[in-house]
Length: 229
Image (cartoon, rainbow, N blue to C red; front, side, top):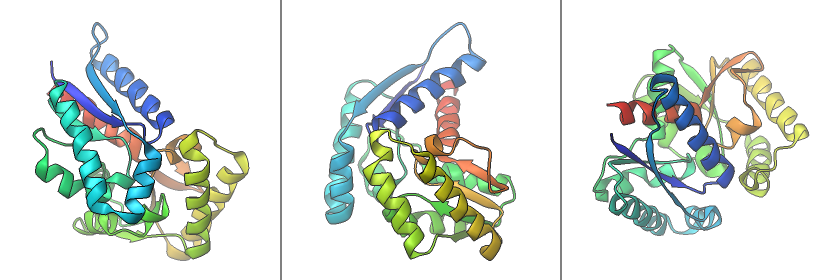
């Protein structure tokens, strides 16, 4: 049996969600056993600091975590968050074990579902980065992001609350209204929850009538399939 390595703590509630989903996904296929998983929990506040001020330092920080997972016996690894994938290529290039990209996984699912124009939600760093537009664009899919005040609202509540496990109903309602506004004005046919905490805030298959790409669910499915390979 392969061993999965998870870079966790990004934030803790998401790591718990990943763990539970991987166990459930495995046991849906192999009910008589359980998967082998190693988790290295790092500091999400440090990740936010580094993504804002030192991308090379962020790559180093994540690579150190991947190295610990490899030494602990992981055969492959996954970073349980979207934002750190801003430096995924740099981390992957120095990793001694294969990594499963959340961006590639979600882009392939958007293509499979014949989506052509997708709204991207997440932290400000994720929404304003090129990683999803590039990953989706290679498959002929356009990316739309919220306007500046909407991005500021989502980022503020993401960094200030969601990564600490705080999920407010009024914030949920406001994010739904943002998706509805984008649906009306930008004619999207999908919404990508490009922050794993957003899947906890918005655990729906559709938002404002728009199909959802839940990055946690899709990433977990890819991890379980790799475990079973």
